View 1 (cartoon, rainbow, N blue to C red):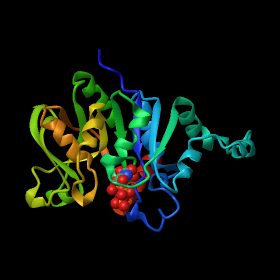
View 2: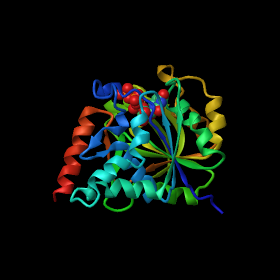
View 3: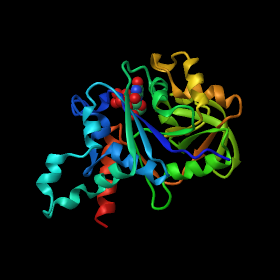
Length: 277
Ligand code: UTP
């Protein structure tokens, strides 16, 4: 029987340099779209997909993440039985539905390395990964829910979420090539981290949602630094793709690159309009 995925890993140790100076003392993952930090959107998506253990890889200066997913007794006391109490309803519900564990990535050696750092929180089981700065929204099933359904049918495979991008943007993403085995589902046979448009194998870009089998940890350990001198999850996944063990799923829904100012503003406008409809 397929092992149900209960854990979701959130690599959140990056410097967020594109958001300086805002990210000097505030983690990028805590920047709010409307009133909710990016990371809370990601955690709500993981809860919706049936996960209950949130494993967060943090770094220096990220303590506000731990404080956010904890009870603030002083605040609770201040607003108890006042008309403002409802403002805490959503975050209270998140805190009640799952447990949180943290580990620190001491040196920022790339996303692959951040995921390997999370091994101590995940253990020997399949898990999901959400990059909270890729904010996804759906009117129906959340992206991670769609991916867990695919994983149930392909339990030996890692799954990456992909989206079509303009070819001139390939140098910002991991890009895959593969054979479409069913509608919107590709068996990956090549993947390249941030290729120049002229070298990109397609315009199908990996976005910040993954389902990984635990064998990825051993593979990352064997993966040398790649693009930018960082240990890239794309390079580690290529090893498994060559063994026919990586699927790419063109998800249904919207995704905003909130790691960039343009994407962040777009997401803010979108959620504001949605809320006021
Ligand atoms: P990004 O490259 O988008 O994040 O990494 P960044 O480095 O924080 O942003 P910029 O480019 O400087 O503005 C994608 C995700 O991987 C995490 C980041 O926190 C982000 O969620 N990450 C990246 C780590 O946790 N550790 C790393 O060493 C690198």
